[in-house]
Length: 119
View 1 (cartoon, rainbow, N blue to C red):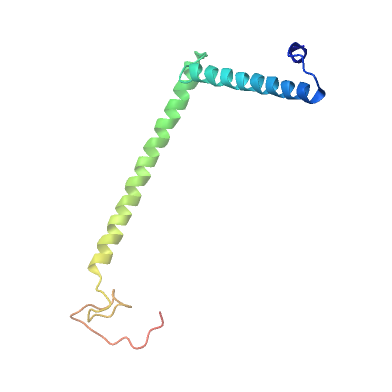
View 2: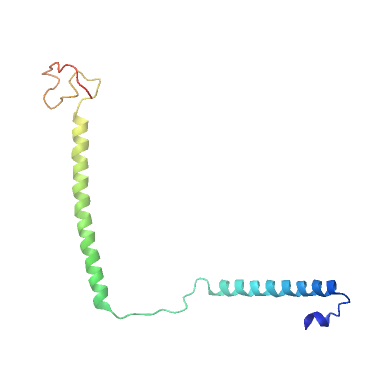
């Protein structure tokens, strides 16, 4: 109907008018959609509250239990890491005179030649 209102003289002119009107319509629809998104951004439309506190308490209890177990295991691993670091600091380096391969058996005062060792 709108194309006839422009009174095109040829089919090409009618097509040109129809394409322009379609482009205007699409641009308007896109702008309205963008404005709707901008208006509702950051807002909550609806909240459904479920008064199932028994389930929530059970979940919270289980979560607290898992957090406690996690903390216990973390302390255990941290203690093991501290022991390992302490042990590594006490061992001599490769440049020291003690035998590095069999360090638990020997120390700097009691050096023994261990012979060839495959590492």
